[in-house]
Amino acid sequence: MSATAGTEALRAAAILGLLLAASAAGAAEGPSFDCRKAVGSIQPMVCSDAALAALDRRLAQVYGQALPKARNERPPLLQAEQRGWVKGRDDCWKAEDKRACVEESYVRRIAELQVRYRLLPGRGPTRLACDGDPRNELLVTFFATSPPTLEAERGDQVSLMFQQAGGGVYVGRNERYEEHPGEMRVQWGYQAPVMRCKPAG
Image (cartoon, rainbow, N blue to C red; front, side, top):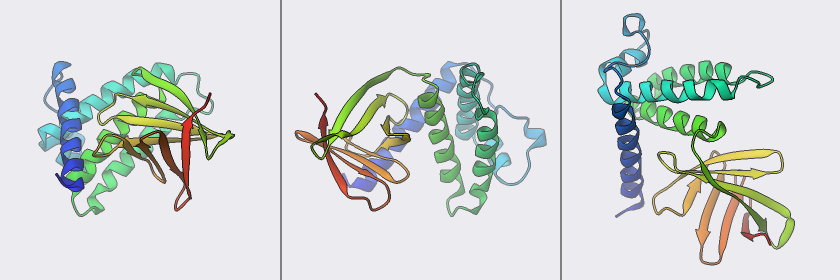
């Protein structure tokens, strides 16, 4: 199986898992918003696509779970970020494959909320020392989101990475984590050098 085919299979499995979760919740067929007030081209697309509508309902459920945990945030980020996310989703009208863009937007936002607000249990954190220097440490926690994710902390920076085909590779915005025999290789930042990491004693 090619890397591209593997990534597509992983994405399809993630979507299937989210759709099954939405179905198990016994939700209505439409999305969480009122389709009579749908605007633009993306909201009507979600209204007319059962799979996207199910993802919208799933996101609304996860967002509702996150709200109580975000109550004491200063400044309050969750609601403002969600409004920004909606705008970003609606900007998918600019994408070559609009539907894939919308689907990916939902999948990533659901996972982001589940990880940030610890709506799912994590495995870890594991402390890693990189390049033989225990002062150059990462904290890594794995989450069974769909698709699986890894949250890595380095100093005051945090990166959410999504599992790629092959299982041992996770990719974030500008970060990459790879598992190799006896070590982990981490690239932190665009075109940054690769660090070799091992569990810190």
